[in-house]
Image 1 (tube, rainbow, N blue to C red):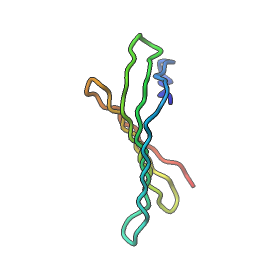
Image 2 (cartoon, one colour):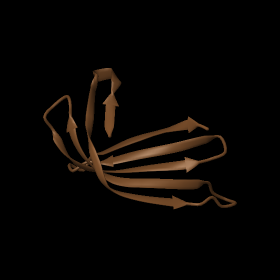
Image 3 (tube, rainbow, N blue to C red):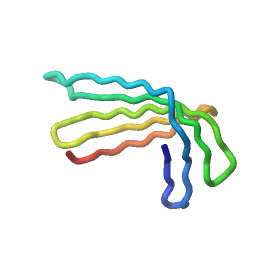
Length: 88
């Protein structure tokens, strides 16, 4: 997995493991969701920092789009949060 920072031409990259997958079916009042949780052993290209983080990616499937959130929990207690969508 990589997190790329386009403005600074740098990235955090590494391998993932220990995956856990879950899904919730759609109901009359909610959309279908899926979640993937995994460990990420990363290294930064812009400094010598490396470590292990825990990440959770959640997808929400509505009629026209797939919405997503990604939370990366770092060892120092910081949390990186990303969100977006993809047209179907």
